[in-house]
Image (cartoon, rainbow, N blue to C red; front, side, top):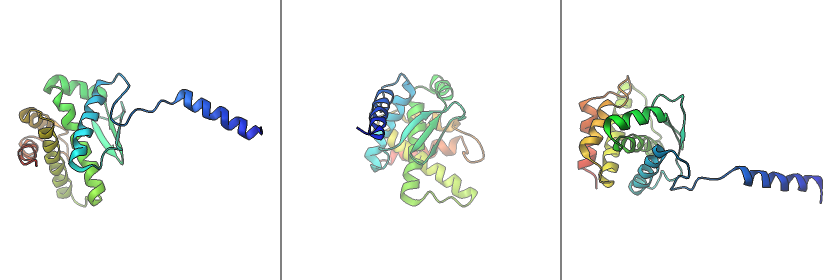
Length: 174
């Protein structure tokens, strides 16, 4: 046996011993927030079938939640606070909204050119989150409340506009 083959064998054993893959549809860790992500991904997957490869990771430096490619980063402390304030459905709604961004990016390149494009895109993602919430049999009012406060900054206009978009998606879901 050559030295290279021996090293390759040891490296394989080391990787196998130290790396435990997380199943695609369930979590093995003790993060209950990630369970809401998996639920949202499973439900959202029935809408488009294009998000099953997306994963969520804890990122304490993230202020809320964001998506980049097939990766959703989220701040667990922020999620816990929102779930205490609005109930556990809030986590599902936020993750469904982020998954809608993944769907948009994969279907149309998520082309955003102007401020009005950003606003339109956010409202479209709110509508998709509403549809996912309807499919999961979540409360329409809890989801609308969640989106009414979610990220009220220059990109994420809040309040009634977002709640209305969520409700439209919830009621118009096929």
